[in-house]
Image (tube, rainbow, N blue to C red; front, side, top):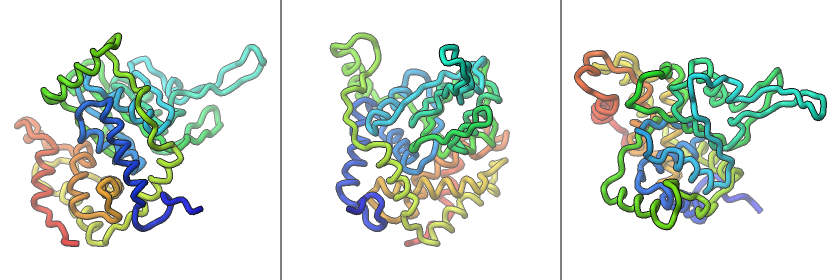
Length: 328
C-alpha cells in the first residue's frame, strides 16, 4: 500500500488532522504561547533549528519535552556553562576497564530533540561544536563519523536580560538557525490556568508530560519533512521572497542584511507554514507570516537605530509593507 504521507499532491485529511492534533496536544502542557508552538511546528516540518529568546521560567524546556512526547522521539537537555567542553556535546572515546578496550561514549546530541539551554554561556569552541552538528547532521569522534537519526531538532535558548559571563553568538553562527522565536509572558488568563494546572494535586513546580499522547512517530515526521519540501512554489512567490531578502541589504537603517541562506530559509519555513494551513502550495501570505521569525536574527541594525530603541521586527514591518507582493 502506498504511504499517503509520501505522495505528492493533496494532503490526506487524516494526516492533516494528526498535524493539528500535534499542536493541540502540546497546548495541553504549554499553556498559551500558540504562536510559539506554531513556529516550532514550522521548524519541525521544515527540518530546521530554533533559537528561542525569553526570560527564565516561561516554559522553554517544557515545550521541547512536550514536542518529544507527542512524536515519540528522544529528548536531551544540555545546560551550557563556561566550562562546557566540545566533547561534552558530541561525545568521546573512553577506555572500558571491564572489556579492556576503547569504546565510543555518545554525547547528548544523539537524540531527536535537543534543548541547548543558554547557549551563549558556553565559549566559542563549544558553541561551534554544536553548530557544526546542526549543519552537518553528523558527529565525528576520533575519526569515526556517526550520522544522527531523523528528525533532529535543536532548540537553543538565550536569556535577553543577563549579559555578564556570556559569549554572544557571532552573526555567521546565528545564520545556522532557521527561526528565532520570542517567548513572552503569558496573559493573565493563561497564567491563572497555568498556576491552577501546576499546583493542582502535584508536588513541585513542574508539569508532567507523561499524560500527553503520541500523535506521530519520528519516521512519520521525516516523511512529512520530505512532503513539505515538495510543496509547490510559484516562480513569482520565489521572486517575492528574494526581493524581500535583497531589500534588507539596501534598506536605510540596516547595516548588514540577510544573505542567500535567508532566502532559502524563508522558502523552507513558508512551505511548512503552508502545510499547517492545509495548503498544497505556498502563497505570499506564507512568506509574510514567516519573514519576522526567519529574518530577525539575520539583520544587524545601524547604531543610530539601536540607540533609538528600534528592533529588527520594526524594520521588517516596513520592508514587508513596501515590497510589493505578487497576486497568485
